[in-house]
Image 1 (tube, rainbow, N blue to C red):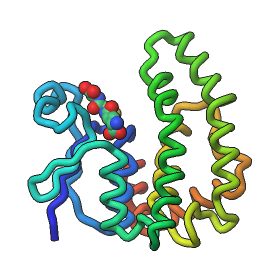
Image 2 (tube, rainbow, N blue to C red; image 1 turned 90 degrees about the vertical axis):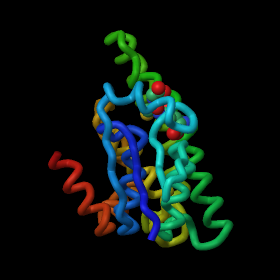
Image 3 (cartoon, rainbow, N blue to C red; image 1 turned 135 degrees about the vertical axis):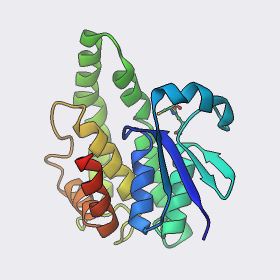
Image 4 (cartoon, rainbow, N blue to C red; image 1 turned 180 degrees about the horizontal axis):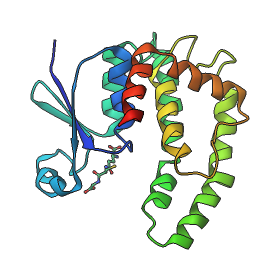
Length: 200
Ligand SMILES: N[C@@H](CCC(=O)N[C@@H](CS)C(=O)NCC(=O)O)C(=O)O
């Protein structure tokens, strides 16, 4: 059994989905959550000067989606065929398209500008993506086939983050997407993990 050491900041951000994927697969890992003050010392030791990083038996990989795809494969959540894998990638890459705007409002320091950016994101950017995703999700609540994949978990993780930063829950009113979220939450490993995460 390889050893896995995941390093990220304490908050949800780009690391939340990775922790969830380990939990969904019942895979043990070392969950290292660093303080901001520790970052300058660690940065030069990372492959691309960024976290999250995952150390697998001494080899370090970075880039959130590469790490997530790797864990998904280990957890049996990458899709059952090459076509299913491509479809899961498609959903994840579709959500990656809006990440730049999320980061943009998240790091905005000016309070007025921040609110303007959030409003624009919540009213224009996000609905366009969610309308597409609603059509891509099945009525049973999966993006790929009829079983949980990392695409569902990635969607859940993004919505979990956004719920805390937008004026209202972005998934309200989307029937299929609400089911995707419910399905992710009813995975036993994720349900346990979220209980721990929200009690911290
Ligand atoms: N494309 C990278 C982006 C990683 C990234 O920007 N990480 C941020 C934290 S969320 C970081 O390392 N910031 C500190 C820095 O760049 O010095 C990924 O998806 O992993």
